[in-house]
Length: 159
Image (cartoon, rainbow, N blue to C red; front, top):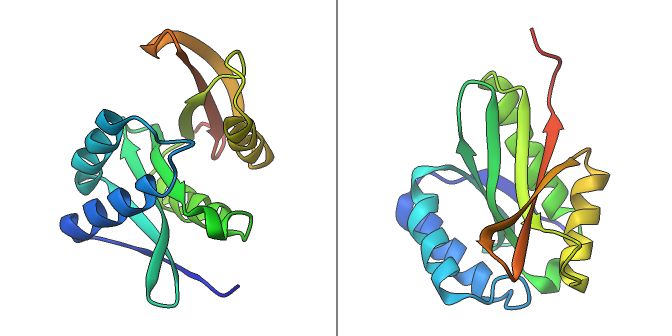
C-alpha cells in the first residue's frame, strides 16, 4: 500500500482528522469524553497525518513537555490500514522532529497489561518493538478501570 506522511498545521484539519480516525477505533477510543478532549487539544500540537491517496487514515499528535521530553499525546490509525507501516512512519516523523527540537526522550501512555485487552496488547507490542520501555504504572491516572502504563524511549544520549 502506498501512503504518505506529512505534517499538518491547520488546526481545523487536525481536529477533523482526529475526530474521524478516533471514531473509527471504538475498541481503543470508546469513551466519548476522551474523544472530545483529544479533538480539542490536538490543534495546538505538532501533528502528522498519514494519507492513502487523498484520504487521511491516521495521525499522531506530539506534545512538548519541556526541553528534554516530548510525548505521543494521541495516535490513531484506521483499522482497515493497520499493520501497513503507517504507525511506524508516524512515530519516525515525530522522533525526527523531537530530536531536531533538542528532545532526549519520547514518551507515551497506554493501557497497562493488568487490564487484559487484546487491542492494547498489540499497542504495547508496537511501542516495545520501536524501542519504548515501560517505566511506571499509574493505577488511577485515568480511572481505576483503566490503569495507565507510562513508557519512554531515549532518542539520543544526554549531553
